[in-house]
Image (cartoon, rainbow, N blue to C red; front, side, top):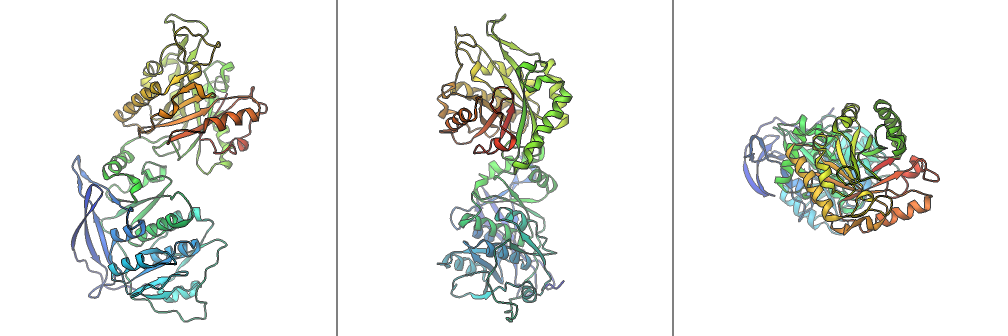
Length: 564
């Protein structure tokens, strides 16, 4: 392997800049002597006053200059050249990203009609050249060097052997770039999208000398997936990922801007406890918010399937019912061990149709609507915690999520939820509220459909969120069953602001496909931001029961599916 590099030395230069709520102090690291071509900035975050053994994370602001330039400014004080590609050319962007990592320089996306913003960053870096992949416009004082399309010509240009990998689709580009090993660099190409550039017979132009990047102490960079897999935002994320990787940071792509999102992100945080955490983009929130989430990633138990956020890191397929009562749903048709096996088998049927992991679940009715008033006059039979506990414990061992379902009769949901506080302290246990069985004074079951006001739901949300925070638990799932609009009054006022709880509306209607889809389309309309969607399949009351494939086609694909 051929690498341009020189004897190493380190020169410390202190620079400070305000990033979010923390002033990040950066040390410039020269990788070569005298006319050092590379100038890395070593992120050094301030200590966490609440936990002196840890440092605060750094959030790279993307509001003004954009994410790519913000990331370059975080990691590089200067560079001998930059790699650039048009923001609207996915194949060029993917190739440029791998070249930036291979040469340890920043990458910038360019507007093909206007390179002024890029020129400003090139001048800040003191770069004399731009290695262009695709149609990059004239950049004034910077000399354009056109990157060859041919792998052998690229290797000759950078004097380095390269591996080769084809990225099947733009959706996998962030992961592919983050996975490049700078010591064994890989040239990426996008499947079925040829690149333009000088042919293999053209003599490659010479690049300025470049070094190899090494951050010490190590840096863990977090980047979230953009909203779209094309356009300027996608290009900014590709370039930011490449630049962080070019600087020697370990990069972890996330489905959402939260380090708790997945098993891999939680593992990365735990495996790099001594690393400085740098979040690429303001979507990660303030430094204080990110700091709390990083702390949680280290200390809070994970959910079945990994990670500490309920969605979008998994889908759940559940057996619904009450133990020992087959008439109430599939869950009660067999003892707990057989129910676990059945839930696992059902979840496996959904795996071919979901890009997210699919985990088995129970929706276990713990308060059952009754036709008689009972001793308390509430028309609700309450299960003993000791009766339910074996199911909770067996589910935990098997990696099954459990939702405790409440049918409260004439009492309120919060009163009943408090009865199961001990079970809700378990990390794999959530809660479901069924307004169909929430009666007003004087009402009885089966004579009308019950309903609940959003204010009562919000009381449960607050209580459950406080319980979760107090006991350092992963995010809780709170399900609201609904098949008529009137079942949840003032639905637009449902509170989704509590980070500890995720709210899901569960379409609970049965019948022929047309009826079920009409209910679904009505319920998904006008939802508050932050509400997820679930679906129920009835074995005996749907005609026919939707298959897993058909269920996942209803649009959008439901995140929680139960079987009754």
